[in-house]
Image 1: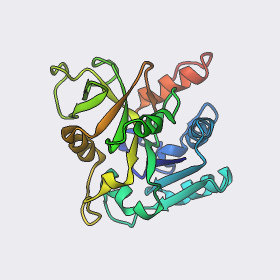
Image 2 (image 1 turned 90 degrees about the horizontal axis):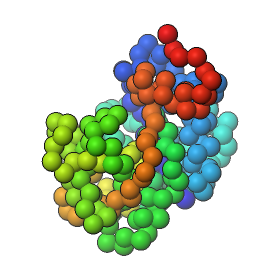
Image 3 (image 1 turned 60 degrees about the vertical axis):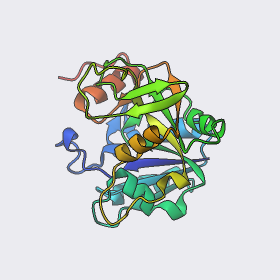
Length: 235
């Protein structure tokens, strides 16, 4: 199974920590975050992890090499592609079905679940893990009906009708979902997700536990507390 990790961003919310270290390598519980993510993916059965890197990619390559041949780094081509554009640019290295997740997400579920959901939905082009957060942690951006994502909207105000789930941070895609995505101008995964939802081709896998992330100082503190409950609170 193949997992694709999006880790090319500048991580401006985590400055100054990310000036010299890419976000995916920030120390968490005494080790680079990539190692924690790798452990979760391997435990879920992934044997090929593709890291789409940009900012400080040399460091990502070194750490990926230390993890072994199952981890491969693809550098961005030196221009802004967006998350969906980065996937399209790496298309030749993608399996027919793959998982896409983020280099700052730590998820406490089985990372293989969205791929199983996609296999069980032969007409779908994707299967998104979602959590019914009802505007907890972050504003909800997903509406779910009959085991499908029927609406995806990250621009809405909190409390919008029907949007009571949130993108959990892991989506299985068929490679054909990337058809038509340009690599000559930026294209975001948000737009792709919204299109799949609007077309009725995005299945939903509902998760019952919260997600964790290191994309913000509070998110990093929450994950540290999860992994080491005895750690002192950050000043």
